[in-house]
Image 1 (tube, helix red, strand yellow):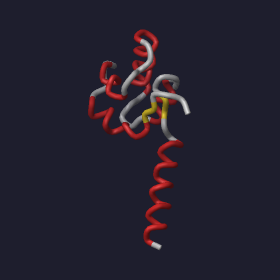
Image 2 (tube, one colour):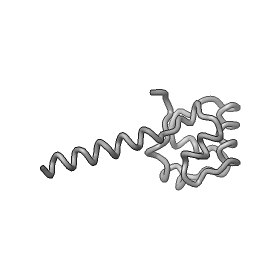
Image 3 (tube, helix red, strand yellow):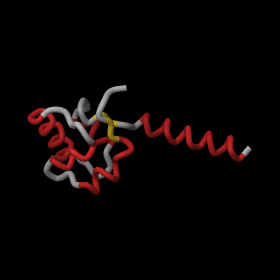
Image 4 (tube, helix red, strand yellow):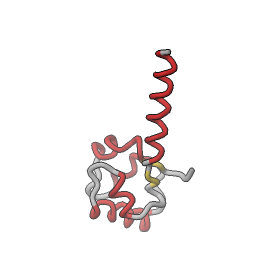
Length: 86
C-alpha cells in the first residue's frame, strides 16, 4: 500500500510540473512571467528579446546570459523550464 501511495504521489508531482512548464524558446513574455518564479514582466521581456536577437536557448543555464537572470533564478525554476516542444 505504501509503494502504491508513493508511486501515485510521485506521478502526480511529475504531472503537475509538466502542466506548468514553460518553453522559453517559444513562450511570450506574459507566459514566462506567469510561470517562472522571480521573473516579472521586464525580465520576461528581456528573455524574449535575447532569444529574438541571439536565437534559441540551447541549455537552461544559457538563460544566465540574459541581463537580470542569474543562476539562482535558473536553479529555482529548473523544473518548469523547457527548451523543446512536447
